[in-house]
Image (cartoon, rainbow, N blue to C red; front, side, top):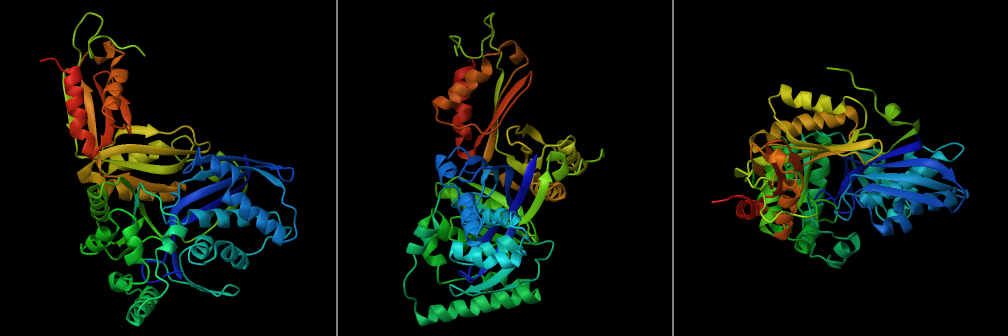
Length: 486
């Protein structure tokens, strides 16, 4: 049971030309659960998901800091909290994770007031904590917002929503970039022609968004104030902006916030945009993951006295190795084939409600569309929230993403991510079940080659795992040498 559950969306600031002014709330969420009120100064924090296991988040937590500051500004002594955070927003990646902590902490403090304030009245405090408005304002209100702040006064306009068929493809590389470092890279002065260039683009961005002239986005999102400098701070940054804007499936591309994530709008075949982003990061020596997101229109929301069944409506029905690997007790070699398959992609639905029938609903929807799912993995360690991951054929990735996004929206999941730069390797044999040591042998061989394993599935005749695409040939070769007899 949670006394309070605060749901806060991710946000993408700037959108190219709207530096420190424009921001968009996205359908990827952090949840902050207040489980118990404790004596003042006492806190128990459990961080699950992004940042889980990081000691710094337990000792210096942004949610707690903003919560305490808000309470004291309102003349209240902040009581202690037992807090659980379920984080799906990547940290230090330009998707507003720090803003989500500020918005979440202030929202918790607001609920302790005798008369909670409207969200709009919380904004000046949130912006003052963050130092700029372009993340916290859309994070709090939802949607796309244009904001101005002079250090004391805040003005903002909430823009019309994106069209239903427009999605945001967000590529998140496996590198971190702090906002402070990204700001240090910016010049103190810019030429007049560059200032005029950005003024015209930012005006065009706001006017086009307000009137629904979406064909202008690729032009309107261009920038000379910050992106040329920040794109140099992470591998593939310059190439991804240049190459992605040139394909027909892209309706505009920009660095998300201060980076290193990159956001591209798409009105069709979003997976093509993501595949290009993925290939560019891979070419630059960086692993990455992808989210296909929609605009969040609600902003921060608060639910009181909730449990797992209250939050989500129940769904209706609708060691020691033998001398020779792969040999059983009688000396027979039980591994007949080593299989590799690069025609796969991994999809994960994050933050799925832990209620009976939820997975059945997802895979029924996939089956009805002719999308076969393999290697299904469901987490069991996220309290009231689970993650569901599986693989599909590359040719079915677009259909699978659309189905998963619809499913995630329907059940209130935290988001959908996928990775097209993966491959499957497997051992096959009719007698595998008679040799229980084989899984540990297989993983030992791959570990010896410094190949990380992502997902694992085992049956009586096959043991399979997912690896990064560049590791497929090396994994298959190592397994063949270890297990196959000439």
